[in-house]
Length: 496
Image 1 (cartoon, rainbow, N blue to C red):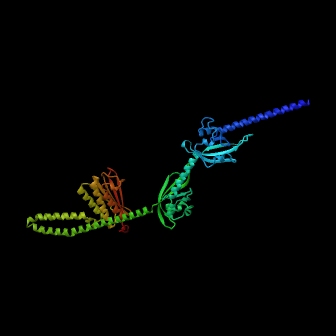
Image 2 (cartoon, rainbow, N blue to C red; image 1 turned 90 degrees about the vertical axis):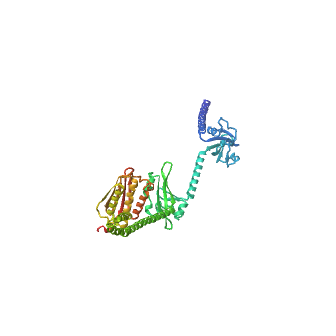
């Protein structure tokens, strides 16, 4: 009975051990299957090599990447042979007996195409097997390395462009704090890089109106791609230098702004040249105006001489001949010649410098001029004056008369107009002289130098603006032209 019981217990124990062993084998098989699946589905090349580096097994990615398309095609070969043109700093003999885990970088050239690898050797031993083996995991990092190399090259190019650029470059945070400047900015302003870093962009202009904060805010909101302005910057020696600033925003891949980029171009020489040109233009304008006034004074002098001397002499000669012609009829032709000479002298006097301008003033002189244009050229010319007093400086009276005469001559020569008018109107402390016609007109948007009447208009504008007046021109093709001359009145004589 006792033996039967013992046998039954031993049988139960053996069955239990068999069940446990079977379950363990199933788990091991499952784990092996799972491990094989992981290896085969991995994106890395995974090789198992022996101590001599001979390949014992290889996953699917390894067969595809290393061109061992036929299963087992790479087995039995040294693992180095599978990486065509392998180049690494690690000696292969040292890889046979690695101490623990060994990782290194290498390159290969399959088909002449460069590839980058991260290779890891890990030693392991099978249970009950004294031979040491290695798991070789080779990860293709070519794309990553090429992107990293391109990034380094881009950074190097930017660094060279930044440091060696003759145009100043400033980098600032979104709070307008300067984070980096190049040598050109330091040379322009006389500050060191350390002195500029940490300052605000708004501290660079010499005047507060040189900082366009609202445009910067528009840049950050994406309403502007860039903003440009010319301003004067303050140097370390308290001098001012003209600069052209171009500011834009650097954005990341999600279009989020992360930095301000400003280019600072030294335009001091250009501004100095512009100031010299403006000064020369002002001098030329002054010279032209003085020449015009001198010419008018000379005309006035000659006209006075013609009137006072030649005119009076001819008048006396006519009186003398009038008495003699009654006795000697043959003197009648001489008398007619003298009469014509008197008329010609009077006409020449008015052509040179109309006495009415000096004796009666601008309004009667312009009224006489409009009648003369209509009589001599057949253009119906209307004159209107508002009747208000118009005290003018003598020089302005002369210039306005000359300008109106020049404009009416342009109407006759170029406008092909049938009607014209000259209007005088006082607006507060200014006189407006308006000259209109119904001629062919011209395009004011084009440069005045392109118009056939350009020289006359240029002269008019130069002379009027030199004395402090303004010239406004409005013209439409086939709809006529309107020119407005604006001249300041003599305020001190307003009550008179």
